[in-house]
Image 1 (tube, rainbow, N blue to C red):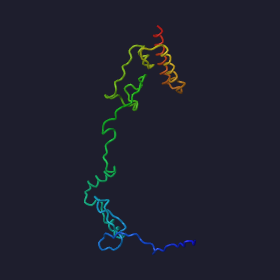
Image 2: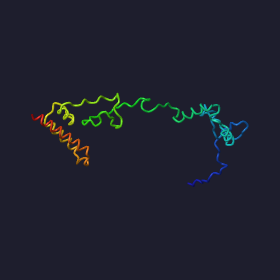
Image 3: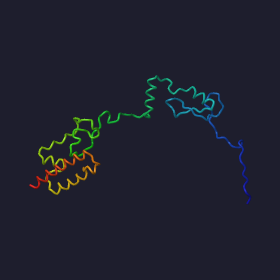
Image 4: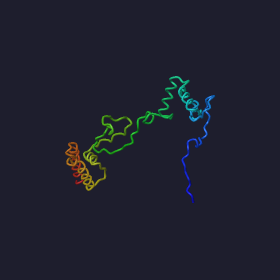
Length: 195
């Protein structure tokens, strides 16, 4: 079986794809380049030859017929891709506080923990009433509620000592003060439960 002979095609032998006629009046060239017909019809095109598309683009003004206020409004809409926008934070309303935490040492009482310089607002949850008797204060410090047993008090005391001991907190003075409060509360509850 003989091998097929292949030879490269010459440029004149390749058929050019059919082209559109140039939309410029009197031009016989092919219209290979598109140009939008108007600002309102950006997907509807004229087809021009290279020379006429250059002339069309040089003379075309997208903002023709618009005053400066309309141009400014159009540019501002384009920044957000012509979609509606609104301010962050629920259209001007302050964000609702959704965090809740237990603060047995009243460190954050009347202060927002996210901003320590802000005082309490009227819409903040009411502060926990202060304990009146020594036993109630001790329960508050150890974060316990009645009824309790001596075993529960000892277990909670051990947890808090491990957490707030100055050695575990790098010799922090604040941790030392908290540990003093925990020790006093433990002694108060131990004596009241023993009697």
